[in-house]
Length: 183
Image 1 (cartoon, rainbow, N blue to C red):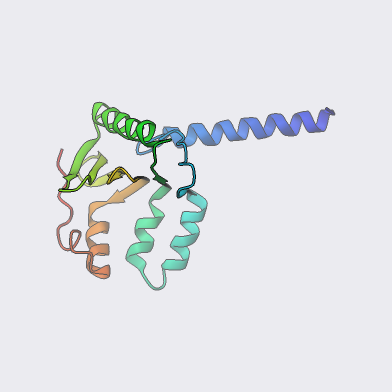
Image 2: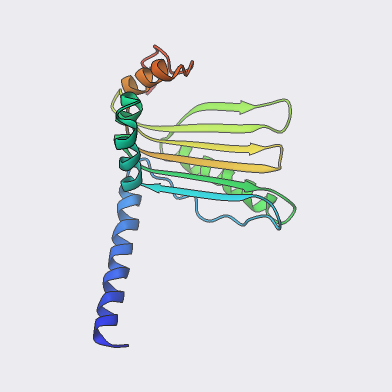
């Protein structure tokens, strides 16, 4: 390998390591790890980084300034949707339960728990800073033992921004509440 290629490779490795450690340093970031797709089922992974989120904020600013303001505070959004079958059901549900246990032990506040009549199983966690700033939200869903969904939203979201967004977009749970954060 010539000297230029080695230097370029070393720079790429260092930059990648820097990006990974920067994401991990964000207080609301949660590393879900990797998941095994089912044999022939749906598997979706979305990773939006800060640059693309800021771009979306600029686009939204004219039509939805409240949404744009919320977007400006975000650093990262990750979404995983994993269809479950006999090949991955056990490992995926165990991974989701492990994530929930880790979040609870790390001081994340469990703000929503839903156990439906069917096999619906939803838990939402929130990490806050002070009384009015959300640093991260994690949504974990196991739906009828057929699908798992995990979402991690990382950044600085102010409660009053969410309330304003709820009013403008008619999102009932957010409207007018100023999202009273519990500590």
